[in-house]
Image (cartoon, rainbow, N blue to C red; front, side, top):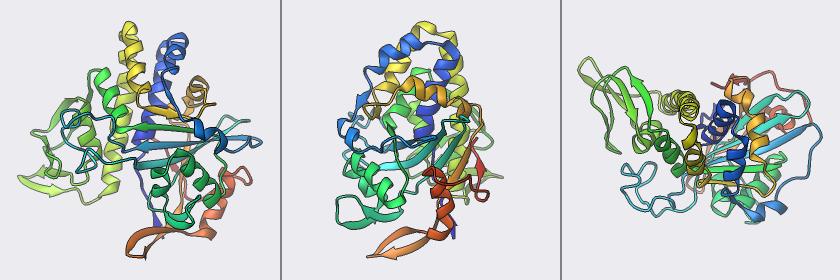
Length: 335
């Protein structure tokens, strides 16, 4: 069995920034004014599930779409791809389960290489390919392939991450060693603290070939995705705190900060972002739990994919479907 560790930072960006702003400023009027500029996906209205007693599920997606980057100058590291012209792809898919009674939050990571029947396609493929067909297809695929109802949808792009970091004038991150990623040109020349702008933050958070200079030798991060996820979580925590501080210290710039995020967010027509932000306060405080689907590696038609381990996954799926108790095994705290 392989427990897939996926990045959560694009989705955490949306959760934490809206929460931090609402908590730090109580800026309901300002936020509501800017909510009108958030992109709405009309076709999701008919794709989403009807209400489920006791729970509300949000499908939160981090998109690698590069459509917002007008030129290499916008994303000088070309993070995550070799081509700015790539279409819609999803780096992260998470189901957030809100318990209407207790107010508790649980997160379920869906690996993008999970091999499932794609809704309307008449074939099986990686679940990531459903997203490339549209958010409505992804929602329907999650519902039919996993049996989990989806009531709301929220998506944020790479551009949104970059814009928010730039809007708060960078995020300070400290590293214990000099570091680099030669594949994308990331260079941190010395150990210590850096005020990272949006482009550098993208490179640091998404580096897949991260090396550190230890005792005069460059050493590759052998933990792979685990180390990458650790860096991303540390960055998100720093960004949450610094976003809240910046918003409190610069109340007249709050509108620009919210605008920078709203431009890169897409939601379903019925999503109330302020209600969402209020519900996310427990996540911002670290009071939530996360689950990962148990999967195993396989090769199908020459592709490396992940197959759901049905028996092990059943209790988790039933919980997120609102049909079973919280599973005891496989829990990890959300930072």
